Amino acid sequence: KYESTFKEVSDELVLDWRLMASIGYQESHWRAKATSPTGVRGLMMLTQATAREMGIKNRLNPEASIEGGTRYFAKIKKRIAKRIVEPDRTWLALASYNVGFGHVEDARVLTEKAGKDPDKWVDVKEFLPLLQKKKYYKQTRYGYARGNEPVIYVQNIRRYYDVLSWLTDSQPDEQTIAQSQFKEQLIKLAQ
Image 1: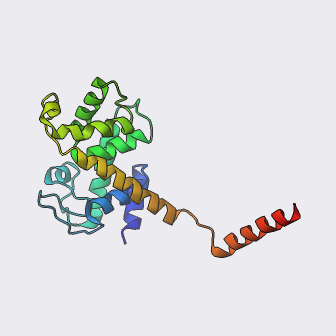
Image 2: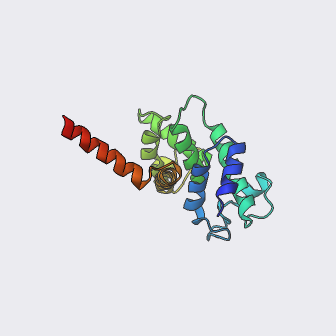
Image 3: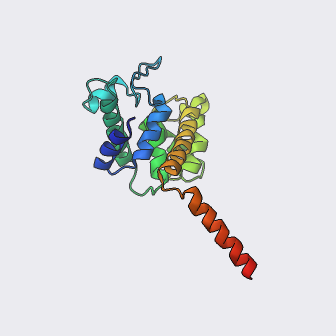
């Protein structure tokens, strides 16, 4: 239903529309009027402050929400240190979209203090959940965060992205598959 909007906005910002659609699915299951108990609303579940920052007047307008969420993701991704390469750059940006850039930076600091690589998602995701424990969050700039949530969030989006990629990449039809299998059998017989 919103594929063309995801494509249009993502193309402008040089982002993969399937990733943005995956964020929308994780956030609201593509429901335009979704509302959470914390006050985030719309298809991309924007806070009032984020919507205002992105120039979005109506968070419940699905096209506006997609535009605001996609622009916000692009803005966060630009804040990620340039030395961080893909796909870690994207995974850290996704975690930031969920829990906030500052909390991800706090987790990166904890990661580095522990002798792990703060530029690798695989290492940072071990330390994000520690932001729920006083022993760790009292050492950080931004304090307490529900650190398990961005880890699950990124994992879910990666899964949704894989599904959307599989669905949208050209798939061979059944006849092509059958012909290929037939050729393989003939080659085996000929050997």
